[in-house]
Length: 344
Image (cartoon, rainbow, N blue to C red; front, side):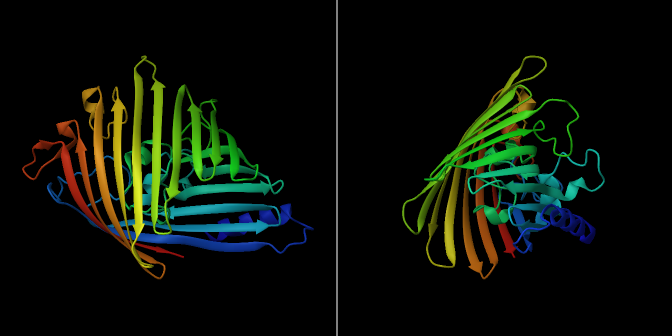
């Protein structure tokens, strides 16, 4: 890691030679771990979890260590975002493709603030779609939604961010096909667009004949109550002309009861067709399947440490999705998670 930071630092110093401002090197990150147990299903070798990403291991389990190094000099800079542990491995699932170390790279990019209104970024960066993110620090709920889990996690390419003032923004991007974050083995490219206005974002991604439209936003009703929303639709036609799609909507009401404690709910409805990714049974049935998931999370802060108790209930249309304590197929699963997340 020291060698990586040194090389990044030397590269930026070379780019910024002769500039007046002193370069700034900073580190941040997080560490998380959790306990997970099914309430109405096995917790041994037969244990099963929701078909969403992360927080799916049984018993006392590891999340990830996230270390972010950033180096900024005047109007240019670089970011190296490294992840270690099960959550990190799941986040960069498509790597390594051509490297023995790419499985620890969550983000790796350089940027140029061309002006106060325009920023160019090139490299590997987390997706602009969706309400939730990879780092548990950025999410209220510890487990993640189906919408987040089915969408892309990261992209590699070049993007341009424009700030038009009055909270109006635009992002455009040319990228490798979805999930190909190390290099491009296909010769195809993806296009991404994001319109932002007053904290509400409309996103579009087109990649290899598939497209996704996504809305992410929220409203502060008061200093203590916030309501977030995420809605998305994805559609793709594969080589045998099967129209695979998914769609969903999630609401995130969150209430701060004191300076140290807050409580939040995620209520999500999600449906996939013609197999989809198989997270809720459609893959097995080659048809349609849907799920309604409710997640109630508490957040107690002790300095930089967040303690998150969480209850989750998933109810799917296909009985083969889960199983009960007698190992019979079931369409419901209830679970409990207790997570500790420390950020620095």
